[in-house]
Amino acid sequence: MRGRIAVVFVLAAAVASAAEESKLANGATFDPTKAERTAEGGVSLSASAARASGGGASTMGTLLGLGDDDIFLDVGGVDKLRWGLVKAHMDAIAAPLPLPVQVGAEGMAEANDAAFGMRFKKVVKEYLKYAVFAAEARRLGLKVADEEFEKARAATREHYVRRGPAAAKLLKLMDEPESFYEHNLTNALLWRAYCEQVIKPSITVTDEEARKAQLAQSEWNDAAEATNAFKCAQIREILAKLKPSDGTEPMDFGEAAEKWSECETAETKGVFMEDDDNVQKLVKDDLREEIEAAYAKLEEGEISGIVETPFSWHILKLLKRHPETDEDEASVELAHIMLEKTPLKPELSLEEAREKLIAVRTKIELAKRFVDLFAKTEIKCPIPLKDGQDGATGPKVRIRRVR
Image (cartoon, rainbow, N blue to C red):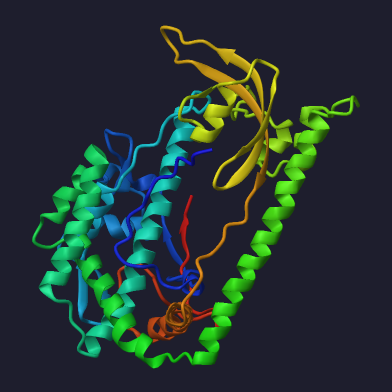
């Protein structure tokens, strides 16, 4: 099946997965119920005084009391982010949530508040992740060339333009002479400069290590090919049980799907189902073209032969056809048995193997240095963001909802 996956544009490569597990602040609290919802259904930080009343000493109460020119984050004394820039960014990314029929207004308000809390936490975490490295890069005298910044800005702009009206507010902010986006992109580029000019030159990979990486990749592919050969034979055996040529009783399709299929539809005996437990009506383009071509030739109740895609093998059973109407396009109800292929990795040259090892070791080194730099960098903020470390796991961030 074709995955309907939203593509998220990242300003710079993420810090190592190990660093991803390092949280950024400790003990921070805020109350999203004090945040005002926008007319579009998103959540805004432009809360009214009435909604802010009762906030007391809560983090959200502190934030709502800040003026636009007040400093929200001061990282190392060299990166000072005004609250108005953060607020404008939060308002620009406020996203409306659909209201399911079964969810009332109160439940929707709680979901919207939770969405805001998660979004605010992510914004702070992501900003600080780049900012602490950028502060060190600045200390070392690293800079971002104007042409490099404009090239990155243009790439981001192109992405947002393709997103259409949903990104209109972000596009407008990008045109401001100073913005949260400008601060964050500058920090991300300084982070990249730190990776390229400080971390990578400190990492060495011997020819022997590179050859071992080459061999490991080849061994992976050998194992993948063996696995795929086994599964190719297995799908033929399954088909033989469903459509025996020796006159024996055919195996039930649902039982076979439940027993062998590697798709989540195995739980429903191979049948594609909706979340509400109704059989899914699949329309053209819901499935890969190889599968569409195969079921187009089937009669209701008929089982296909083996259908191969670049990623898997399938046996299909057409359950029902629904002709096109004035309200709906033509669709089918379908069941399948799927065995997934193990993807092969490209063979590596010695230099490619060396670069791959350098990239892995760079991520590991970044994770280590992040913990150290975060602990050493002086970060000033009107809400609590850093107050120590937790053993070997490094600094933590906890931004939680207060009821």
